[in-house]
Length: 275
Length: 275
Image (cartoon, rainbow over all chains, first blue to last red; front, side, top):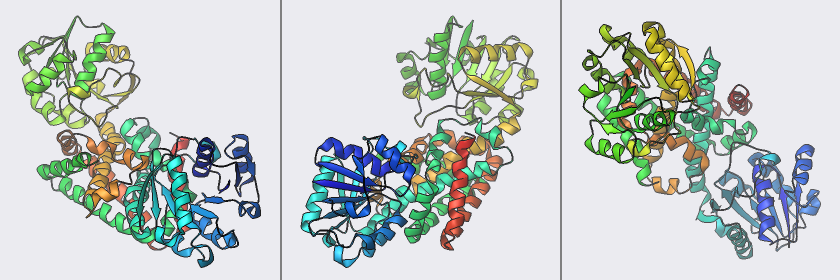
């Protein structure tokens, strides 16, 4: 079997490295619109060879690992693949992608989202341990072909990922709270400090707490802008809930309701009873 | 020389372990109002012996490592120490503590804040690497005695800490942005997820991003409620700035201004050019 990966950044590159280890594919080819990224990916051995889209379309399994807006743009050009072919998209949003797949290839298509990533991006950020032992969400499987679902599962089991299935609407709701909202918050905290008169003086005092809160503010603005666009509604809902919490804490501090503030903090502590 | 530590949790316990390594003190005694914590601290060897306050007051150096409200309550009872004695408080807020020190012992007193911590607390959370190689802020040094400043510096240099000096007002402003605000945000994110109908389903998808954003939501509610109380004004100011950033992002997403959203995210990325 032959695999093709479109998008050779953190996710696509790490996938290439991990797929090589499984031995499932005789050859893994890759495509990246950015010539420098393609060159880096090849010299790092993330895939065996570079290829054009027409050659990728001949693969048994095609992975889409570009930012999510590019996935939408790619979809029409994938029409014409062989009936047995499996296309797996790895985007962080699922509903819009799932409903945008052309009908002719909907059975070939499996919607996936690996719940792992780092604040780094591009081929140099790739490492083979990124995906194994992490959660992999598969959505809207009833719209995919039996053969394609079986193929996707075989691959993700070989990658030692823990599969969770749900519909794409639920995914987008959950992903907003667990991933998209936290990124907006981290960007907002970074910008809060940067907007002060003396960010350097403030940053000189940074300890582990601040560092862990702004780690993902280093993430790709292009990628996260795309995600915000595609999951706009759910993200706005989660932002509303978050703002209510912040406003609640602010009011308690403003009104010096310390017992209630301590209870609110203790409620947050209780996350670790179920987590 | 003999040292006494009041409060044998994460900070006081870690300090005890690190002080032992320096060999500066012949004997290190400790006090904790919680009998279980005292017992744990002794069995973990965080200090050499337990002691009453009257015995602690005979030490050459006394460290205050309780939650900050307890530091305020302790201050009057420290009057009566020997003239050469150095008292070092390690609280996360500085202005209120600094101005609350009784005049009789103000020269004995050195205000310090180690910019290190973890989400864990209590004696079992202590470890000797917590303080070394981290930032240590000393404030309002002009109000401390020359001997006491020299002693504090000698100790923190022996602990391999990186000393930064400033006035307590600046400290409280900077600490609000770099530490106190991030804790409120982390608690708010945890409570946002917990307030949903199905927190377990959402948490099942948690990856590294969410985990790093809610790590400090595990922190002691007592300790952080105290800090919020003592740094109320600066914390409220920082919350205002943060809410403006969140509201700005929300508006851009609401109004689908994607180019501006990407710029806002890229601005946050730029934190890493100076950090």
